[in-house]
Image (cartoon, rainbow, N blue to C red; front, top):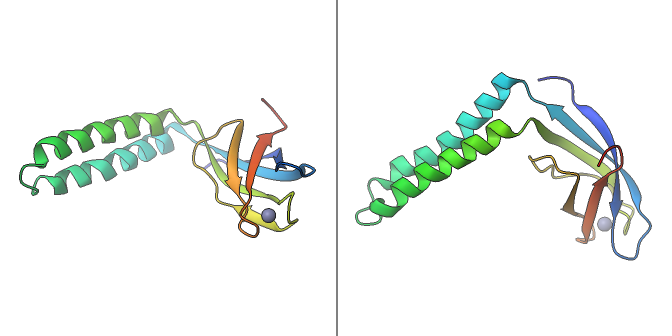
Length: 128
Ligand SMILES: [Zn+2]
């Protein structure tokens, strides 16, 4: 994997001053994107394979999970960047922490503080 790029971001919570956060974003090589795509699709295809043994429901579950696998695989292949780490200070309780990193990269997204359980809004300040 290529060295993750660290982007500046701000964490905001309703009624609090925004605080600084760092978002580590990894750019994926075409091979890594393909691997992620097949891993995502393979998970659902394995579930589809297991559903063959459920009488009656297999008429719905097997094609359903095969289709979900294809959609997931295509979505993973199209993701050129993944968020590997989000680190910052909660604007409410000032607790410094690593947040659970969402896989998809977006300009803003919601996070939950582990300490005070408030919903925080993360916005990238480097780019829109
Ligand atoms: Zn907090």
